[in-house]
Image (tube, rainbow, N blue to C red):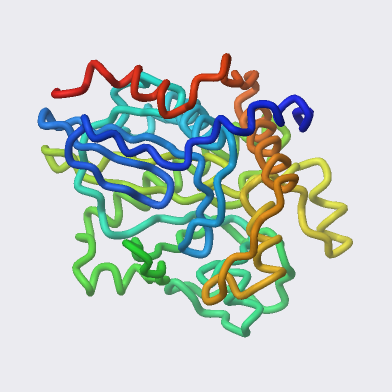
Amino acid sequence: MPDIEALRPLAHLVLRDAEIPELPNHYGGKVRENYDLPDGRRVLIATDRLSAFDRILCAIPFKGQVLTQTARHWFERTADICPNHVLAYPDPNVVIGRRLDILPVEIVVRDYLAGTTSTSVLTMYKAGRREMYGLRLPEGMRDNQRLPQPIITPTSKAFHGEHDAPLSAKEILDGGLLTKAQWDRLSEYALALFARGQEMAAERGLILADTKYEFGTDAEGRIVLADEIHTPDSSRYWRADSYPARFEAGEKPESFDKDFVRNWVAARCDPYRDAIPEIPEELILNTAAVYIEAYETITGQGFDLPRGDTPVLDRVRTNLRPLFGA
């Protein structure tokens, strides 16, 4: 893991917001700021905000760069499976993609009984439920145990403070959220992407336990992979070498996803109802190091820390200046 003291002098280079008035049609998401250009391109700027429990918990230095560059690694290595939205990377925190009509269902693929949120299979299982997402799980499973096979656990896509809600395939089709053809294609893409992700993660000594995909349709009606793929924010990675022993001992697997902060918050309040306590600086710096370690472990590449003292937003604005007025 990177030396915390090496990161401390750069900790002020954090991108909390990325509002750029010169760019049109702004839409702010939980983590990304988006701008729709008149020519059909979308500018997506990954901030350093950390989102969990359907709210913003804090900002983690370098996180937006980690997410953008990790997603780039995976987009480039899964383009043969399904089309994605990527057109260009003008900045370490920015991707320019095709503008899509985002489908109203998030596709979550899981291979383990894990998670901490209200929509996770582990939370539901521990509450006594065995039927969920239109599926039935066997009795007698333990925390973080591998499922009989990967399953798709779709949720509704939450907007503006709404909560994700579990969905079954029947509910998706009966509610007209997707057509049968769309659901079949999404399922095919999601399972194939997850299989590729697990295979490549295993080569890096990792277990890809679960992940979330977001899809949209382009002007021709094609289903296209959007947002991000197999990042520490959208996925749960565990270290493969220590998993068996920790599972047998009833211990949580070693991970470097955002449970690092999420667990700290969940231990101190009801994160869906209470005010979020102030997160200590050391935890934020340690989380930044975890994100960088995740990038380097997942991709096998070194992470490029920002050089100089230029604020991240100023750098982003400079790199996007050719789009002003586009």
